[in-house]
Length: 296
Image (spheres, one colour):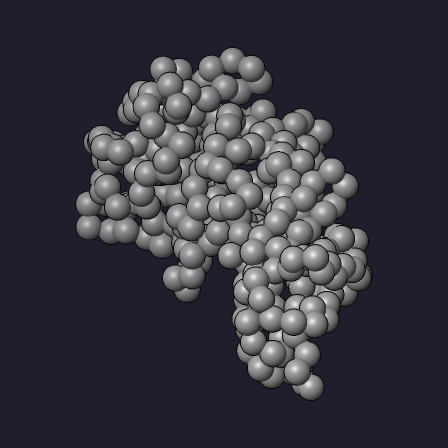
């Protein structure tokens, strides 16, 4: 994994070239039998190594105490191009490293669903987000996004939707959510296509950088909602206990973006036992919210 391409172009003269994409400062070594070729990825992010012969090479990326080895087949003369990144725990990655690994296509080799990372909000509070799934969400153009992250708990403050639909809600449109996240995190987020029902016959599509989960993303069998096609279940939500969230350390009722089908001025919510409840989140009321976003 991690191989981008291989071919006969560009190497010339029978050379066997390994072109390595990665983060500057990462040490790269390629070993085949007794032969090792090594170098350091420069600032530009691309290192070329002349391997000298074809074969299956063990390519290791090292950065500090972290390393990751992959097997690379360089069986043709010319250029074989790969991504090579030092394997780091999800919680220990910088945003630059997160984005690079997401773009490399190697994220499933590095991390697992449920891995977490802390973020210090612009207001000074610290939150944790966890990997909700891989390749779950899509861009508005239908391209799969590598990572979906959802807060393990809720934002420190409460918020109201302001209107009776997620599409027009002030929480979505005012820029409030975006202002809470530091610029380096905003910079690696990818807008996702989100579906939200406003009636039994109407399903609206929005393009959201930050969003509140729907009932169908939280529950395998959502109840009291207009429709059950507002996305699909994230695998981190396996039972009621997995849906319990806190605000400032105490279990809390939190709001979803799904309307209550029995009384549309209300949004469906999840109680302190992780169970769906209706009539608990009027659109004008401030409630706790967990936030999700994608990295691609």
